[in-house]
Image (cartoon, rainbow, N blue to C red; front, top):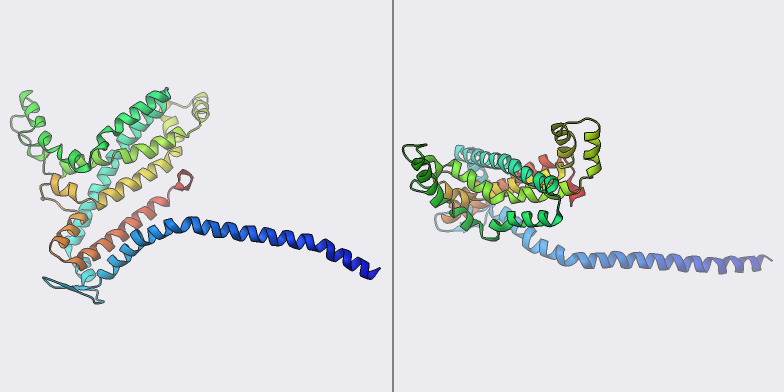
Length: 309
């Protein structure tokens, strides 16, 4: 009887062990398949993102003369940047552009997204109006930026119209080649990056929540501030990250729209590259990257955007 019971136990345990081996094999195959599917993208990110950043960080420690650079490990580039008052002035100017552009793009982007999401009832009209907003973005940034120059110039359309209407007696010089023109160009270039994520978030809001707020006696302003805006925080944060990072890394807009009378960090890097000071440019780029990552980290502490991704 003992031998018979042992045989029964062994025969009963074999299917269980085979099933366990089969499940384990399938799990391993799934993990292997997952790695195989992710490896091309991982390779692309490694070659085109991680390695360039590592190379920039390495070059930032090199030395440079007027006509050449040489491998070294020294902190001279960082020491010069962190002790120069020009660096702090340029970074403050960059933050000024980023904050002002963010404020204007958020105001315009939220207004446009709110109108499309809650005032346009037809899906067809929503799509049509949204595509209408994207038409200027079908051209390059440089063309859209330069198009402001004949409009804002001393003899441009804006000054001519204001003088013909008797609003001003002489042309306004601050319309072009000033901080005003730089901010205007930034807002024009990057407003769409604020509209899209906010509009996407608003379209996901359950309309019954808004109806419940009205049924509870809330005013339109109370519904906006207590229901719609809190539910739109992920989209607002995504748009803010887009706008702030793009403005802080932009240099061509500041160059053209300020008439080279103003500077930001991108212009500082561009000037160093033009002077063949690659280690100094790399050090500035590393500091800019760290600064942008810190800004993004601060923004992400307020809202969890994973639900929108």
